[in-house]
Length: 330
Ligand SMILES: CCNC(=O)c1c(-c2ccccc2)csc1NC(=O)CNCCc1c[nH]c2ccccc12
Image (cartoon, rainbow, N blue to C red; front, side, top):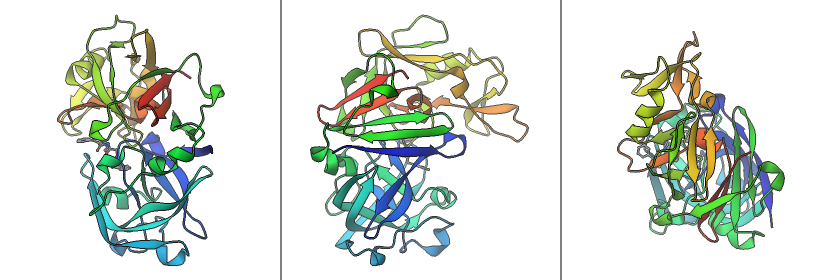
């Protein structure tokens, strides 16, 4: 089988939301497909009502194919401090025309304020590796784990765009979605993430250095989080850039000319270039003079995060069959 789902950016591309049908008859929720986590959790009829704020709720009692996994629970917290928790059902889930009939659907009973405050986000669909699923007493498989054996090819692709709808495809590679060749590199999934290493990077027209970037491809993270040497070198090249202690982040003048950030993929010279204007991420004030930087520090995480700012500059293949990740320009 193959499938294809349009994904739609929220304001400032902070996340990309994809319609997902759950249950019989189908209840359609807009979920954040997230290669940086491995839980499929949704706002639900069980979510504490004071923590619901306009989100579409999955109601298992309205689905003839829902079955509760008695005694199973889950609790997840993300690096930005957000969290959610609840119970577990299985039900039929369809994304882009691909269906799995007994998918673990983690219904939220509690969600933190970051999720409450975003009415458009009805939950997450983890596309990381199963080892980091939080369900107790038995970890559950991701949607991709479950559908992979039935896909024509054991892969999905991410084609995110700046302030425009993008696409997740399942089981096939659309040759019209990219230019030139796709360069594949090995993934180390011990961490549960799509972890890979870029051999070098360059800022603007400068020569490539020889500093490797060990990171994860993370569709559920908005920004491009990098080691301090790369971040300092980047913002050192942007007139008026500064570290704003109140924001805990680098900002740039929205009218600055920002250099591109190019990272190497593989050892045959393939590169991906993040346009400088993607790094002038979003105005932090109504005046529109100061912009939040799309590149920020990966301090304390232990690896870099190739989030949406990086991913939307490329066509990316996540191959679960041979555990590789493929990058192509577009
Ligand atoms: C905030 C995004 N990123 C992270 O927390 C994260 C970290 C991480 C760990 C420590 C400190 C900072 C980040 C490692 S992997 C990783 N990636 C993920 O966890 C991917 N899933 C993020 C889901 C997510 C968290 N807060 C949201 C708010 C809206 C939509 C989605 C989300």
